[in-house]
Image 1 (cartoon, helix red, strand yellow):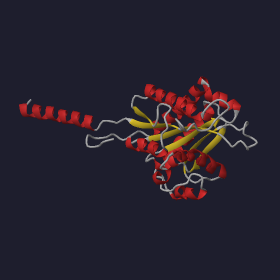
Image 2 (tube, one colour; image 1 turned 180 degrees about the vertical axis):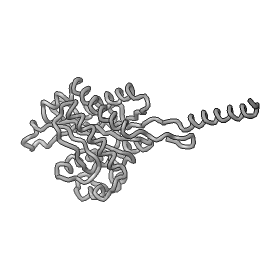
Image 3 (cartoon, helix red, strand yellow; image 1 turned 120 degrees about the vertical axis):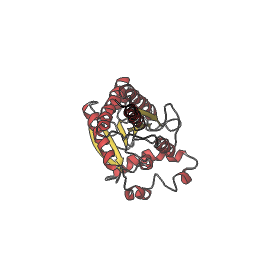
Image 4 (cartoon, helix red, strand yellow; image 1 turned 60 degrees about the vertical axis):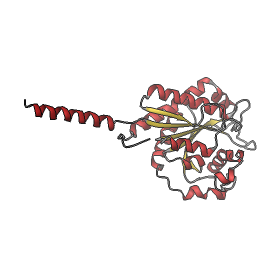
Length: 270
């Protein structure tokens, strides 16, 4: 064979190898947001605090992802008992160029509610219209953490988490990621019901600031009601936290399989 042909063939193989490396698949970036933390304890049960349950389930979920999905990079908005502003949570997710944002919370109802100690069930939220006063109440409770921030008015541009009029910003917002957010929400809700045996309170929409501020498909999970003593005991137990984390993982795994990330070239950055 002609020496020049051999040289050109070898060069072609080299180019193919370089292109394969430069256009290699990148990691899927999963941002896990354990709600509340530090001075913000969240909802309270008889003994348990929401912030501790959220963190425990979030870390179990993240650890399972790291173990089972080597092509996923896990980013936490907090990994200890730290207070993180809502705006900073979204900023962490956006700076990480996340492919998916999962915020983990525990539900509760007001003490005056007659069904306070009996209500139970999981529900998963995406950003959108409130649909009901109950959805708005949940969003108001989760957004109320803003009041713990000294620069609340400046940071959130005058948004008042306790005023229903402020929520028009979410009703006018058209999310580019709504379809994917709903897909993930439905998968997680189905898994929480089917695998963790939670009562089904459905997939809902409401105006959560942290979901609005993240530039990626985003969901907020309410695992169950800490105001119900039976569910509080489950939420605070190692068994319950493991089952809930595993259920979220199963939903995530299906979502990831349905939504592979696009490969990046050496000219792209994450």
